[in-house]
Picture (cartoon, rainbow, N blue to C red):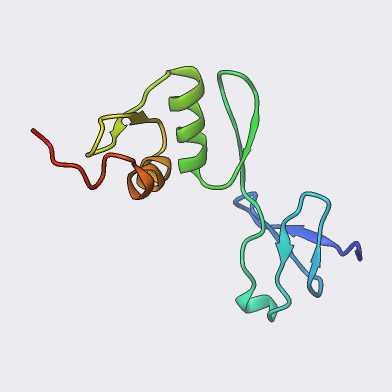
Length: 104
């Protein structure tokens, strides 16, 4: 694994200036030209617990809703099981044991 320089954009989002490699954080770095490179990581800090959450503001919102506020606004249409994250609900619905059963 080659250690390449990382530059920080004004928004605090990291982008690599290196050929493809995997950093210790496990984030794959693009070998595309600088103008076409993908964002490597954006981080936010949770105001409740101080945890650094990588990814978009949605990831931080999901963390706060699930861990601190205990909110589960997404329910399975087949069995009414609740989830804090929409993608988790979607995955569950695709595998829900009640998905092929008739509802009363």
